[in-house]
Every structure is written in C-alpha cells, then in structure tokens.
Length: 131
Image (cartoon, rainbow, N blue to C red; front, side, top):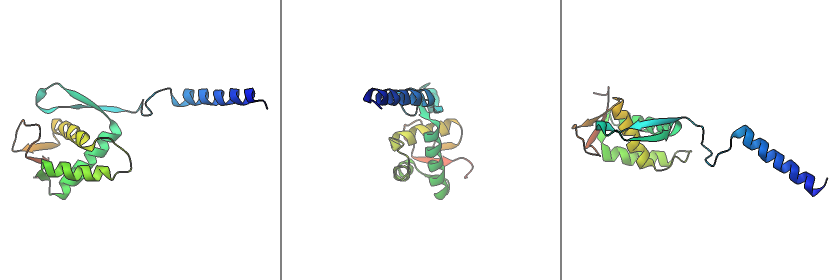
C-alpha cells in the first residue's frame, strides 16, 4: 500500500470521527447545561454544565446534612472545595461553582441564608427541611 493510500485512509477516519462525534473545539459541546440564577432579582445568570451542577449540589447537600443542616457559609465553602478537589472529574474552579450552585439552590428554595441577608456571602447557610 502506498503512502498516499495510507494518508487517504487516515483522513477518511478523521472525517468519519468528526461526523460521528461532532465537530467542536470544546469536547463537552452538546452536553446539557443549566441556567443558574442569582438571588435577589439581579437578573444575572450563569450557565453550568448539568453534570457539574449536580455534582456540586450533591456535595453541598452532603456537607450540610453532616453538619445537622446548617453551618457557616465559609466553612461550607472550605469543606466543599476540599471534597470537590478530591473528585475524579476535573470540574474547574470549585469555589466559583459552589457559589453559583448555592445561589441557584437558594432561588429554588433548597437553601436559606441565616440570618437573612443580601450580602454576597451569608454568615450561615441552612438546608431547607433540616430545621
């Protein structure tokens, strides 16, 4: 087989791979995303991949349940960051993801600030239903 034939086969394989998988610079293109809203009606939103939101949300819920449902927000951030850093998947900036996810959880009524505040970082955060 000539070098030209080998090259043609390699090119055909690459093209077939792009057709089957999709042609994108970002390997995660096409994965579902979630629109994370900000509390207090700022209208600002951030998009996260659904799998990242789910992983961070599960971590937040797990940490809060272990702390009887409420803890200082700074302590939650620290523990969540540690656990997310140990995760198998590289999720990116765990503190930004944790803040964005917790704000969406507040909008959904899953978390409550204690005491109620509009500050970016609340003093304490409580899991709804853990009273």
